[in-house]
Length: 278
Image 1 (cartoon, one colour):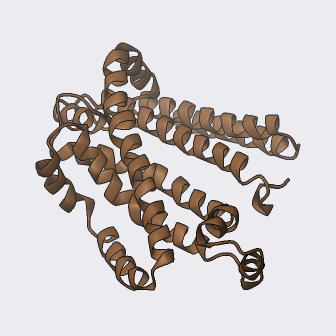
Image 2: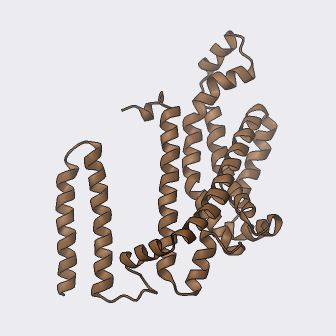
């Protein structure tokens, strides 16, 4: 009973402080609200594990996860490079480039528009647990097969957004380009690609998390002795749940940073768009 009251007191105090800070405007106060909320969740998590003696195999305390993180920094860094930089990032870039090129081809050809989009929809509906083992057998156990899985996962969302973006210009704008005797490629470069940028970045931001998920899940079906998916799988078998949560924390921070970088680039590229104006 005392433990529950202590946890309730912490929550009420943090809630009261956040209400007061939320009434003030400015990026500093927005950051403080988020930081206090996150710190409160961690404190309550730590208190619950200690007060109710929750076993580590069920839910390790944040302090135990932090110790596992500090004690396995070289291991976690190697897993980060293998999964995020080699598998997820390379697959995301290749998938995005392929989707953009395919969208331009579809925009040029009504035949491809009728044929490729249904096929892309079919590929997007394939379950990752079904295609990952196949691609691992095709491309081997190293990061190349994980990148192939990521390409399949990110291709269709980016393609759909890019096709919609290329069609976003109205007839008046296209007619004006025609009066200037602009050819297709000039019109594409000067008018339609800039207009498609907000749509493209929507697809890119959506697929940042899909890329990480695809790379991690693919490692469950075959990987060298490194990688986040491999480490999570083996650590669960060893009941080393603190290391599992440390890997999850690294993946969460990496995904947030990945999304933030893409959103920052979007703000620089599409500064003219109403969504970026303050």
